[in-house]
Length: 299
Image 1 (cartoon, helix red, strand yellow):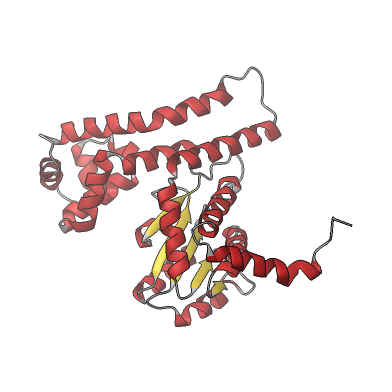
Image 2 (tube, helix red, strand yellow):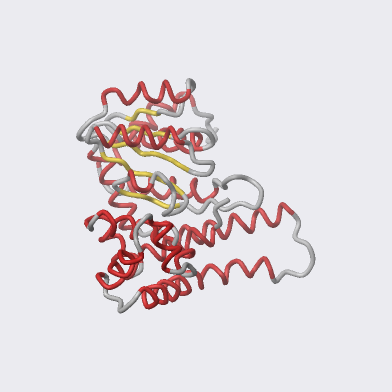
């Protein structure tokens, strides 16, 4: 189960100076350097404790390659790089530790309902802390400019996809909801015509559905843009995405909590709605269309 602590710490690590260096190497380094950078970005906490031989085994490279990697990104040795990794992770985890101790310090047992509500609050705070308005605006622009917006989610994530698609329909030229009945086969059929100028919005939360990754890869291979909404930078969908929005999904019992994801959906939709004055007319048109079917409260 992915923890909220891991989410916020991993996001903070990716956005740190060291994380940015590793991201650059993963994007444009040699094959061995890309392998090492990818391993460290996926397992930053584990990397703080591994000996050089263990790191080499995990990355499937030689110890000489590990040493060379450390020097190439500015460290005198592997030990110096590991120390910097530990310091970066310590800094990244401090804010979330303060949140987590609010539950631990309580006297007596915490009722499951109260613990669940507290977990939801922490997820919301972690998500808000890891999210910027610039990221929301960037994704909103991509949605607005897309020829067709495909919204994908399987399993429990299908509920998020349905919600987002419903919100987007009045403001986009064409929205295709891929979360309906029929499962993967029907979802794949929707992607037959995807191509350059189109956008795939893919939800992927624990338990991660492998078919989401396959469909995202198909979209990329046909030159469509892929934006994913997931819980952590180590999620498998991330490497297939052009942009990623993170929502903490930690839960003490369920595979994943949807509270922060719903809040993120609303934040994204509102960012899109207020980004263009033309959306006011679209909202008015929507009200006109559905008003006949709404319950009136003014009579």
